[in-house]
Image (tube, rainbow, N blue to C red; front, side, top):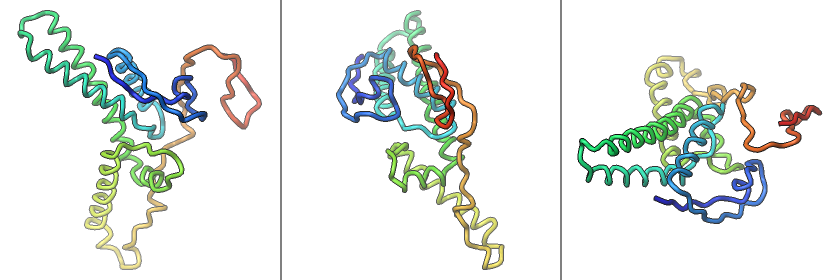
Length: 199
């Protein structure tokens, strides 16, 4: 199975920091789509903040899962090759579920911060439309729960919830692991430092 995805020039060149945002459609094989999903999953798991949602990758993987399940439904239960394909299907589903679960955990942990970023609008949206709905409902439910359990029993001058003090932000000073995709002579790790390291 092949899948078409829009890819910007900077993504093709491996530059996520800037550059041209001209998109062109590229055709990817199942293995390439799975590789992109695994990369997005690992990046999401190890990044302290919520990364941009890979909607096209998720949609392609969901299409592939649906097609694989349909193909496997026509094969007998005792077929050895079908068993291997079922294991591969389970593995792909695990990676996809883990990717989405990781994103939801980050949204729950930093819901007010995520909604602030979305409302700011200065950067591209990091949430899928479904995640945005989830984040808004989760924040509303948390506030209603806090109101019913705690705030209604407080004196009237303390019943107002100050969101600016309640915002949990990701630790942007935490350590992250990186791997160079290609060899380069100098990498500026800290923009405030004059140290350049070759990789």
